[in-house]
Length: 422
Ligand code: AMP
Ligand code: GLY
Image (cartoon, rainbow, N blue to C red; front, side, top):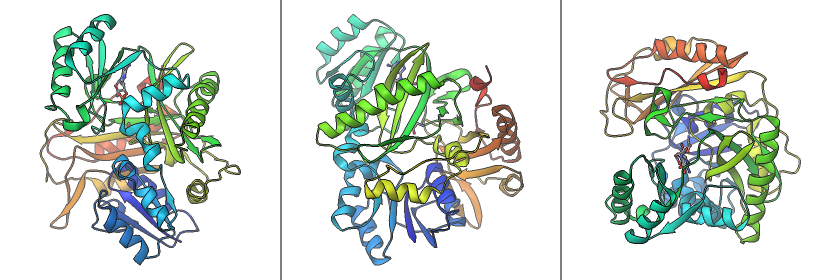
């Protein structure tokens, strides 16, 4: 088989790495990919939003399966387009990817189908929005409706901050059109977990549990990022919490989407807030989480390709996933300044030394090849991911890898996984 993976982050490197282990696969392409995917796949210089170019490439190369990593092409309808041309593709169709592309849509869906979530309302005007946030009190959560690369959520700790966020979003200054509508919601306390499942629109096969670290600094301080590290399994997802998440979140959402005429096929990612035995949904994503995908795929024992094919074919009733007992931890190495502005083009040292470490893979995200050297080219640069018999061992291994790698201005959190040790 020939497989095309779309995207260029740590998630896509992890997908290419896992797909590359399948005996079913002869050749992998990655568009546009990065220097990490280039060691396994052939990178193709096509951007993720170039739907016409990607379609032409897939037809010309007779690609047997296309796997879509990021949300942007899903929300642009790449799956619909490929299906119209009878190409097999893994991912949510446009009318289902809206579950991530519009927070107002997903909140209304949750309300309609009794999926537990924070109290909220949707606004397009400043005055009623401020009246509602005054009713909720501080802290309060303000979310841009549309896609904002994981940065469209403000947790306001003062009324001044809340009012400024609402005005910034609704005026279009922050996030452009994505902020033309805002969701204002109740602040929830607890511990977060990422709950992912494959679904064909009817059957649901959950992945192992995972937890992300969204804030940029240790101790969950500072602004939210796309994710500074992740681990699996997440002890906060006890068997009771798992059962509740399956019944009240996944089942109701998959059935609700089908009832809305938007059958969901792909991987559905629920961001959960867990507090005692309460499980509430913070958001949905229509794709694999990044960095969660990296530790999850390192723990997956089953061949991923038949699973992706079964989803693409619309029947996962016979899919079973097998996992390694080991834990896996991913530490993201980022550019200084991320999630704000950051420098690019700094030479990364130590990748060869890190590659020699056992049970460890350095997944590339924002890297580029320049004059024969690998340099930084994005906010999240590498995902150093390791397996261990326990979370503690996986943490130690991952940080051994991190210690081997350096560049000018590297930033990473030193507490990834520590919540799992409590
Ligand atoms: P979202 O993109 O909606 O998941 O929001 C990004 C992050 O903001 C989440 O992972 C949480 O850390 C935080 N967050 C979102 N909604 C809430 C909420 N209602 N209460 C507390 N934290 C939240
Ligand atoms: N790590 C969070 C996300 O992928 O949205």
